[in-house]
Every structure is written in structure tokens, then in C-alpha cells.
Length: 267
Ligand SMILES: NC(=O)c1ccc[n+]([C@@H]2O[C@H](COP(=O)([O-])OP(=O)(O)OC[C@H]3O[C@@H](n4cnc5c(N)ncnc54)[C@H](OP(=O)(O)O)[C@@H]3O)[C@@H](O)[C@H]2O)c1
Image (cartoon, rainbow, N blue to C red; front, side, top):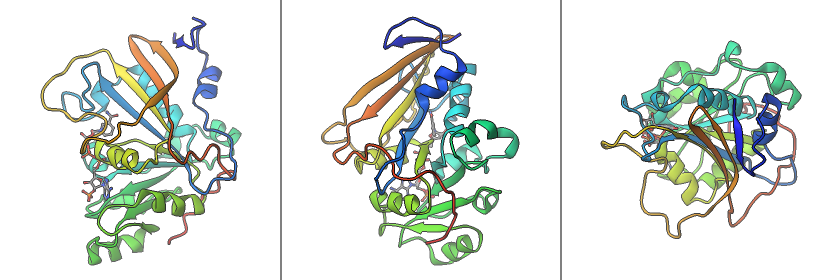
């Protein structure tokens, strides 16, 4: 059974409590989505397990939180590197908590938004399912690959060589994607944080030490200034710690403007 350590009332956390703790903020007038990241790391900071994937860092409670966060979002934002290493596919109906999603005015399945410069992407992922996959790329993307992707999926082009996340998020919000869950990886996370586009971070600390050469949850140049996090809650189950941090961004969107409406239109 999970316990809440902060704010400390030492009571057990029910499934309903967990939904309340992780629900996205209520919609209000912002033109960009609320962006939440979810990561798991070992106690010594590795974002890759012994097999260089993240699943080997996760316990049962982390898998539950992972699924709940997916159940509460409109769209999963993920870097192409993670899709290749982890073999990402569109979310299937049997993986989705459609009742919970309906209660939160969400479409039955979350869409995917895959960030790639090279467009070296899995065709099944790009094609999507009943929920679309949106490909987020740059003007310098390879022309032929871009034409192929456009035949299969809506595309957002933002930025010349690096995705301009402020612009990409505006375009995604205009398509109805307001509650965004970033599942990594570390390179994408670095880009999002550097662009001050991250609103909250859900971080699971796995009770393990792994050492070796592993990525941390942000990978890239030193962030100047470092971004400060505010602890919103800390939970524990089975030795795993579940922290939720809020990021004080310069232009915090506060809350969001309209309820989610997954359109999948290309731009
Ligand atoms: N512990 C965890 O919770 C967790 C979560 C996710 C991933 N991981 C692990 O992290 C590793 C992958 O890390 P990663 O950093 O390589 O993956 P990543 O961030 O998912 O992907 C990096 C790729 O995404 C694209 N990309 C990212 N930022 C971009 C930008 N600003 N502009 C244009 N394209 C951009 C590029 O794709 P192209 O190469 O296609 O151009 C880039 O090579 C895997 O081992 C995975 O298991 C761990």
C-alpha cells in the first residue's frame, strides 16, 4: 500500500487519491499545453537500467503510476531515440482505461507526438491507431522521408535544425492537445527544459544502484541557470519513491483554456 510522505499525513493513498494527485490542472486561457514529464531513475541517477531500457528500473507501483499518467493525458510526447530503443507502438485499446478517460473528457486513447529530426521512425508507430501519431520535426528534415511521413501522419514543423518547442506546443495545442505527457527521453527532456516548456516532473526513484555509463533524465549542456523544482508530493510504495515537482517557468501557463479535443489535423 502506498503512503504519502509529503505533505505528511501518513495516510494510505487510495486509487482515487492517486487520480487526484496526478490530475492535470483545469483548463483556462493558455495557448499552449500543460507539459508533464514522467521518468524513473535509479538511486544513483541512471535513467537507463542494466539493459539500457527504463522498464528494468520499474517496480509494480511505478508501472501503475506510468499507466495512470497515460490515462490522464491527451497526448504522449516522446523522442525518436526512446521510440527506437523501447520499441514504441501506438497505445492499444486494451491498454487504456477508457472509463477514467471519459470521466476526464479525454478521447478513448491518447495520441502520440514523436519528435524527430532524422525521421528514422517505425512505420506502425507513425501510422497510429484509432488515435493518431503526430510527427514533430524541423525544416531541415530529409525531404523524401518527410513526404513519406506526411502520407501516414499529421506533421508539425517547428524550427530549422532543432525543434522550436514553444512553437511546436502552440501548434499541438491548436489541434486540441492540451494535456501533454512527455515520456522522455533525456535528450528531448533537455530540449524541453532549456526552452522553459516543462510544467511538472513526475519522478520515480528506484531503490537500486547501477553505476556504469548511463544517461541521467536530462542529457545535454549545462542548464544556465539551473531550473528549480518545487516538491508537490512524495509517495512511497515497496521502496519506490514517487515525487511530483512543479517547475516555475518564466511564462507559466497556469491552467489551460479548453477541454481536450483530439483532432489529428495536419499543419
Ligand atoms: N528512465 C526513464 O524514465 C526513461 C524515459 C525515456 C527514455 N529512457 C531511456 O533513454 C534512452 C534514450 O535517450 P535519448 O536521449 O537518446 O532519447 P530521446 O530524447 O527520446 O530521443 C532523442 C532523439 O529525439 C529527437 N529529438 C530530441 N530533441 C530534439 C530536438 N530539440 N530537435 C529535433 N529532434 C529532437 C532526435 O531524433 P532523431 O534522432 O530521429 O533525429 C534525437 O536524436 C533509452 O535508453 C531509453 O530507454 C529512459
